[in-house]
Amino acid sequence: MARGTRIRAITPHVLMAELPEPFAYSQAWYRKRGAMLVEITTEDGIIGWGEAFGPAELTAPIVSWLAPLLLGEDALAREALWQALYNRLRDHGQRGLVIEAISALDIALWDIAGQALGLPVHRLMGGPLRTEIEAYATGFYRRDREDHLAYLTEEAEQRLSEGFRSLKLKTGWGLAEDIALTRDFRAAIGPKPGLMVDCNHAYDAVSAIAYGRAVADCGIAWFEEPVPPEDIAGYQEVRRGQPIPVAGGEASFTRWGFAELIQHRAVDILQPDVAACGGISELKKIADMASAHGMRVNPHVWGTGVALAASLHLLAVLPDNPPGLFPRPPLLELDRSPHPVRDALTAPSVLSAEGRVAVPEGPGLGITVDRDALRHFAA
Ligand SMILES: [Mg+2]
Image 1 (cartoon, rainbow, N blue to C red):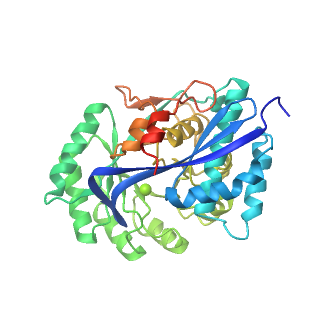
Image 2 (cartoon, rainbow, N blue to C red; image 1 turned 90 degrees about the vertical axis):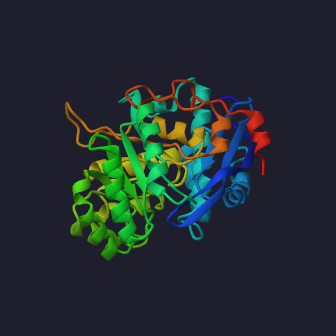
């Protein structure tokens, strides 16, 4: 064992903030927004940070339950520890909250490994293939206002002026309204910006196919989560029945969950979330499986700077698909919707004039977590 890398303490942090203006996606309204961070400390004082996607009040107790399995173990033995955690709860938690908790622990262990060896995480994984990543803007949620196109257009103008070249529109407000909104939004932003749509599984296959056909001439790069994540056959029907590439995977978990999506060719673009799918270790395995099957990967990202940094290190090493002189690199999902915890917790992500974000170069994740923000937003 490397000197001093025994795990001494594991602390989950549940953070919560009220939102100045509530917003909705197709499944629920957000009136507050939270985060669950995991802090792992080693015997010689290295501190690693991880983050879990999903309800913070529910993932934190799972981290506390798993913590005794890790205390005293070598933090560098990431693979062995991942298997120990997963195997311990395999019969009870193959997806969802348990895997989200394991994701946070795994990310923190990578942060520790990088700091112990003085290297950024992407170099531990054999990278970088690329040192900066083109970002697309996530946001464009529903607000409790009358004229939706007005604030969405204003938001689009702001993002494009910041340097973004692609925007992702939230849909899922009813088929007729979605078709009209998509057409109006495309008309408002003009033909040049990239446009994705995400209905967060608000449709069944019949409606998703009708939507995809109705907006086929709007230049849409991908149609995200058209149907519920359990409906693999529905995904296949949507892929066959309309022309827009289908994306999904933010509600899928581990190599086994993604193997199902891959084997059934359920999507064109896989979207594992590092803070949900099983962590950095698992997302790399999923990406390698996708590479072996010729499928694109664009990770889902929706958290604080901890999950963002972990995603950037992965994006630095994801294989080009297909490889060549002019590859299509994976994109970074950069969430610009309101998140007071995110904004205070780490230094903000910097977007270049070309809409790119640099991969962190410091040891581990290469981030600094603000202790005042941890105290201020503690739930
Ligand atoms: Mg989504």
